[in-house]
Structures are given as structure tokens and as C-alpha cells.
Length: 475
Image (tube, rainbow, N blue to C red; front, side, top):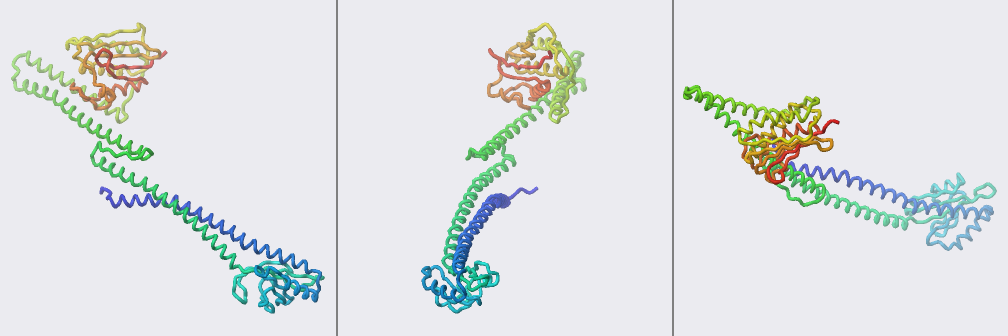
């Protein structure tokens, strides 16, 4: 499968940035648009709606003051009111007759005209006061007008109308909305660029981490990423660095394991092949030589079988086929059988195996006797291989609370302190030159753990190496 190119990486990065900005900035933009729209509606209502309501109230109030006048009296009073009207610069006051023509106006230019706007028609036909906003039929200027009918004895005798220009209000509305829009745009710009900076601060380190991760995936195990942040990206960097180190260690351990197993298999095979060829060719002339050769072949074959069985056992653990046949048993009896089996064997090797029996009574537990015997034998064998130079191995058994404690100690050189945390790792052999595959302790720990126990390793006080097994005792 083709590897992603740098261009594809950049496209992916842009895709992440685009999705991030769309998901975050688009929401902010929508909120700002809704806020500006709501403010515009409120401002429109305040400027235009408020002015229309004021004019309508003013026209209604003035019309009510003229209800006492007849048609003829209305004209005279209207003329007098217009002559004394003082607010001509802000509002134009008009008095109209029943045909809709302007009789008198604060602005003499409109006198005699017939505006025929909807507010006038509504006042004459429906006898209700109403505002109107639009363009003046004569000048084309945007105006706001409010008309109210003057009623005398049930008849409309005229119309009072107030008119104001909207140019000032329009300018104020546009100016205010411009300021609000500029503020909203500034807020959007700040959010956009802050998000852009924030996304870049995430995407660019991720791009660097991705590049190093690809280098690691290509086989450069142990490569480290420079940590620049103490946040989640820093935690990701630590995790990848730790992964890189562990992969490098695993790769090294696996290579050492393959080399070690190859060597361990080659040695007995060489001995078996050599003696088999010697016997086959008739070079072993005496019966003693033949017995000696056959003994070596049997011994080395047993070594091979033991190693293969150990590897198969580990394979069963790894793929989940490892099972226990649990039954009630006496832990003390099982341990003593294993010690008895190895006592004579160790004696021939010049190693003294001592067993210190704690309690006299049985130690009942639930477990798999074959698997536990496997653990005891494996640990005794390890003690002889790695600490046999001390010529002494001590096995103790005692009860501590609700736990049975088994200690197997040798009096050899012990293990380097820096290697202790890794001794139970699969394939790990450390600096030891002893024969073995490096998975014995890993198998032992798995068996003990499945018995709800614990296996601890460490150097003993006074020298030597010590393994401690703790298993729950049934009450």
C-alpha cells in the first residue's frame, strides 16, 4: 500500500482546520448575526415605531381638542393654531378638509395640495388615527406622518396631520447599525484569528508527531519527539516516546531471544548429532562409550523437550489457550515433592538444597498441582543455573495471615539492581550468561497470578537472589 505523501498530510491538516473553524467559528458567526439582527429590530422599533406612536398620540390628542368645533369654526381655529405653532422646524402640522386637501400648514408650500396617503384615507373613511411611513408624493422625501379625524356630532369635519422627515432618523439608524456591525465584525475577527492560532497550535505539533510516528513505524525504534507542551499534546508526546522506547526494547529483546533460543537449541542438537554419528559409524568401540553417548543423547533430548514445552506453554498463555485444572490440594506436600526431586540432582552438581518446613499441619489451597509443581521446578532450576556458584539453595515455607509464603533463595551473585524491574518480562535475560529462553519467570508469574497469588523477585539480604510466592490459604 502506498505511503501518504507530504501533500496528503497537508490536505488532512487543512481538513482538520476547516472542520474546526466551521464547527466553532460558524457558531460564533451565527450568534453574532442573530444578535445584530435582534438589535437591529429593537433599534428599528425604538426609532421608527416610537416616533410613529408619538405622532399618532399627538394627532389624536390634537383632534380631541377640536371636537367642539363645527365645520366653519374648525377652519378658523385651524388657521389660528397653525399661526401660533412653534415646533415648525421639527414637525409639520397640517389641517385637511373632508376631501383630503390641505387647508393650512406650518409649511405654506404644502397648503392646497392633496397628499392622499393611506393615513389620511384611513382617518376620513374609517375614522381612526393611524401612522404612515413612506415617500412624500410631491417631494419624494422619506417622511413619517400620523393623521387623526376631527369629529363633530358624528361627522368628520376635518383631519389633523403631523408630518416629520425621516432623514435624521435614517442617518442615526444607519450610523448606529454601522457601529454595531463594526463591533460584531471586530468580535468575529478576534474569534476567527484566535481560533486560527489555537488550531495551528494543535495541528502543527500533531503534524510533527505524525511525522515522527511514521519514522518509528518505518523501523527507527527508539526515536524521541521533543516535548514542547505540558498539556494533552505533551501527554501524547510522552506516550509516543514511551511507546518508541518500549518497541525498541521489545525489538532488542526479541532479537536476543531468537539468538538465545537458536543457540540453546543448537548446543543439544550438536551433541545429539555428534554422538549419534559416532555410534552409527562404529567409532564408539566399547560398551561404556556407547552407554555414555546414549546417556548424553537422552539428556540433551530431554533438554530440548523441556525447552520446546516451555515455549509451547508460553504460546498457550499468549493466545489464551492456557487453562488450570483447579482442585483442593496440600501446598506443603506439593512443594516437598519438588524439593525431594531436585535434592539428589543438585547434590550431584555440588549444590546443597535446604528445606525449612514451617507449620506441621497441611496448607490447603485450591489450585492446579501440575502447574504449581511446574512453578516450583522452574524456580529451583533457575536458582541452580543463575546462583549455583554459591553452592547452596534455601527453600522456606510458612504462613503469614491468610497467605502461604514460599521463598526460594540462592547464594550466588544476585541480579544487578537496574535489571530487577525487567526480570519477569518475557524474553528478558539481562546480563546473565546462563542457558535459558528468558520466559521461565514470565510463565511462573502467569501461573501464580491465575491462582490469585503474587510472585516477587529481588536480591536477598546478605547476598544471593530470592523469589517469593504468596498464595491464598483456604480457611
